[in-house]
Image (cartoon, rainbow, N blue to C red; front, side):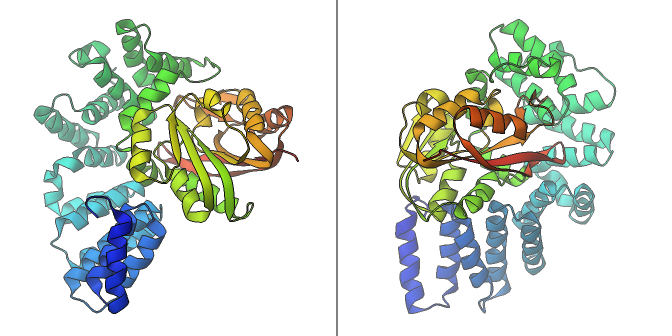
Length: 443
């Protein structure tokens, strides 16, 4: 398992369980292997069975803790918290269990409960990895001065901590102080961008604007800064700059799934796959994952369907490395979406989750998809929902209306089968509405 040879590790556990189905160690480890391999649904089943075996409390607690992690992978955060609290009750002195519980409470935005936990478990205040989380908790509960003191302590130890600097600037803004870009002059361009992005992602683009403008002074060709200034000032381009998208995902590749799935409640790949199961046969020939990222969608598709050839493309080499590590694809390529699509043919299914949010007018994409699909092929995708035809949000992401999807699909010769609203991801504490759409190329 440590060598990531998951099929071999699983086979050993299955041999042991064939001799003794009540072997706790084999059952527990099988669940952990499946979780590491990305099969969270099967992991949950095995870990639940392990937790129900007649073993000492400390072993049951370990199984429950891992079950909570597997449920978290499936975005079942409330269920995960309930199971995590069972593990804590069985083994109250295990610090890791309490830390995992705090992370779940953050995802659920149970800020007051986190504060209550600090009173009961004061040692949490000393855990380095929790300091920014705890400062966010204090900010969300109105304890601005306490949050400032906490962040000041973090910056005393690590003066260039990007997340702490971002929280510091945000707290300054909330206190009525203007964020002065020149006061962050000791930061590198990458660190300054990270601070600006933190402010923007937390919903304070106006406070981030001086930092993005400072970035443009330092580097007039800085694509990300230009894009975010455009977003702040209402300038809508055809698409986000490739350098911006590539840099964004290269920077966050290692933490991408934890951030998007765990903290922001992102379930588009799972929901899209579930919907496709009602629309397509179980066996598929050629499938393309557009903007595949770390492979979240690809892994879901491989679990649901038997696929002859699954290919994926992405701008970010860091994300592609993650996808290769997780496995499941027959071919992965670093490429521009349109260029790559124009090389594909006879696709039975083309998918795109959380990638069209970086493209404005979807007309060219629809046309390329039409050429790449086989007759009766399906194009399944998600976008952020817009009230108007097309919007560039302060987050730097595009939003599209159903009318835009329908018009561009029809113009490209595709039939829009359905378009429905669904909870896409959390944004500044509120769930962002997405549109899940399915188009078909007529026979």
